Image (cartoon, rainbow over all chains, first blue to last red; front, side):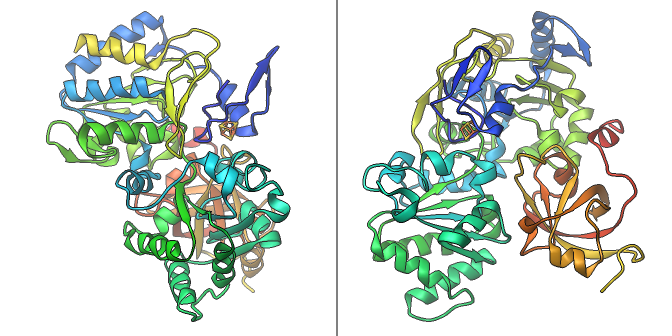
Length: 387
Length: 110
Ligand code: SF4
């Protein structure tokens, strides 16, 4: 089966006699998460009652915001976008504060990219920038980047891969790079500047980047994985980074892939881009961009699907969600479910519901569920029917 | 060297990072340098405050905070301190805390 615990979408997971094989700790936690119970105002009810109550709330909403969606299949995301359009609502996912901007650079063809399979078969320099896959994508390095012996890289990490990390602190991945490759500790803009200087034969604040450049020149395929650290380090202006990738491609082939997000964040970005020209944060009533963090301030109803904003977003959002009509659709118990008016449990994507997801590199993956249970698409369709 | 047990408040650079093992715990990884600078001991409650919000973490001296002062796991506790402009890194004030916070300490107020 496919694990939907992160955007690696590992396809080699086996569940036999209740035991999970091959998944990382994060995947096991995701697959074993405690199930949510249907409820209205924290009182357990049947799923039919919860669906009916949610339908009433969504139908009566004057100012609806739909949020989450990154852990559900594309087919359910499509229905959620349809619902947002039908209700003239705002729709957004975690990508507006996660790595959506990097996916947008790729969809708008501002940076060259590749698939993880190409990386596994061909990449020599593997540069993780502002990303610590050891924690965020635990099997990224073993399945796709540093460790595999594959294609042109049969001698694996011992001789055929060069690991480099740029980060503001010593992470687990940085520690590994320090041993066998190169770790550059510093501010992202300074490091970018140092790369430009090194290409002119000068020394910048981080002269050690010259070693990474030298390694890149040895190969015809190198990759930079950009994480949340880089995204925030660039402070919303990606021009210098895009320019750097262009310049690096004058000396060797260097592709860019965003690293570290929810299982199907990219699927949502692609669907939204196709539908609206925006990758996220869209208001169907005005046709303008507005993030969940802003929209929730004015909304009277929030439909949170496959996400836990009370856990992951600033506290004013939790306070606001507790004030308005919040409906949660999620497989597991969550902090947002604790403050919601209505909770509708669905099955875990890939376990009890099928469909497709888009991996971080843009590859479409077909889920392989092994049991039948309530799907997110079914819940959203039932809401669409009443509005 | 400052005596952490006695000082009132000081500033620290805080990085928010994913941490699968600690994501549900109020654990703050503290760099050895910083811990020495403020005489902070392993296991000591450490109150981090920012924008009128505070969380008390259990301090763990760790090599994975090297390069900054403190690293806290992404998740509920970090969300109480971060905001959309400072999602990954911010400056916060720190002082000795009393008891390490739990999620219920915050959720029961809602
Ligand atoms: S790396 Fe991600 S997709 Fe793979 S097993 Fe771990 S959580 Fe699941």
